[in-house]
Amino acid sequence: MGVAAAQLSDAEVARRLPVWRALSDIFLDTELDPHHYRRMADAIAQSGFSASEAEAIFRDEVAPAFAANLWDVAGEWQGWPDDYVRERVLAKRGSALSKAANWLFHREMLDREWARVADFLRA
Image (cartoon, rainbow, N blue to C red; front, side):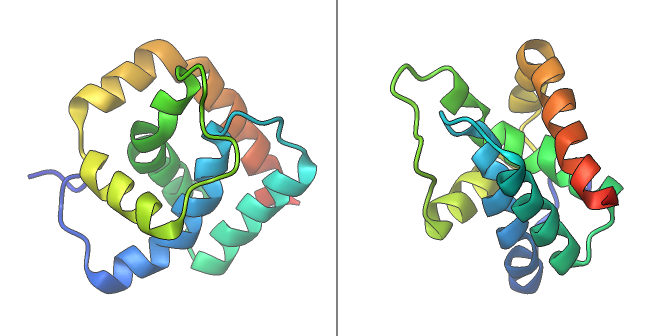
């Protein structure tokens, strides 16, 4: 079993949840502004994850869980409750199929959105 598919302790899930929640906003059917990216960067900074760790969380955990919202005609636009975020990420975490789909269909968008978050991490 790879690191991505490894079980997370309750403490690690609690540490990741604010990051998952903040980064899941990238997949809402809304226009994001600098305030949103600042909030994402703040959640990452408060979690103690490095930029590279946060990028892996974004690409390997959050994107597989929420990228499908980009294809939904009536996609979610208000955000998801914490319980849903936790369940969805844990259910999709380690999914090779979801990661492959994101690489094929969303790679440019993921690169662009991560660059925006990373700009605020450096600020």
